Length: 113
Length: 113
Image (cartoon, rainbow over all chains, first blue to last red; front, side, top):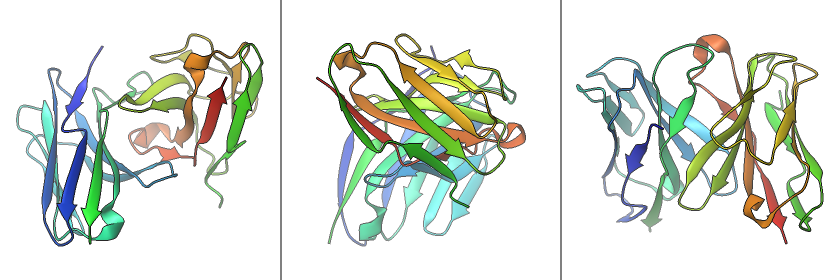
C-alpha cells in the first residue's frame, strides 16, 4: 500500500527556534495535509494543500505541497511550549468516497523552555 | 456542539472478552472512521462508513466489526479481544465534500491482558 515517510521519529528544539519537518512518498498524492495531536487528544487538522507548488500559512506554521506531488514540508517558526505534540502528514490520492487518507507515522516534537 | 465523542475513555479487557466502542458525532457528517494508533505506527484505518447503513473495510479490519445504524453513531466491536488489539482507538468524521478535513474524537485507550 501507499506509505508516507516521516523522519526522524522525534525532534527536540529550544523554545524560539524554527523547525522544519518533511514527508515523502513514492506515490503521487493530490492532497497533502498536516495534522497535530496534542498529548491525550485526537489529531486536529493544521493545514490542507490542494495544488502542486502551493505554499500555505496558518499563523506561525507554513506548509508546502511539493512540485512532484510526492512530498510536503511543514515549518514552524519561533516555537513555543504549546507546539509540543505529534505532527502527522497525510495524503489523499483522489477525492471521493473511496479515496481514504494515508497517514505518516508522525514526528513527536519536544520544545525545551 | 460536542463534536466527536467516544465512550469509554479507557478499558481493560482479558483475552477473549468482547466489547463495543461507541462513537457519536453531532455535526451531521456523512462519513465516519475508526483508526487505531500504535507507537511508531501512526494512524491506521480499521473500518469506515460513507453513510447510515453502510460500512467498509480499511487497512487493518481483522478482528473488528462495525455498525452504522444511525447517522450520528459508529460502533466498533471486538468479538474476542487479543493482546495485539491493545491500542488507542480514534473515531473521526467528515463531510463528503471535504473528506480531507476529519474531526477526531479524544480516543479510547484499550488494554488487553
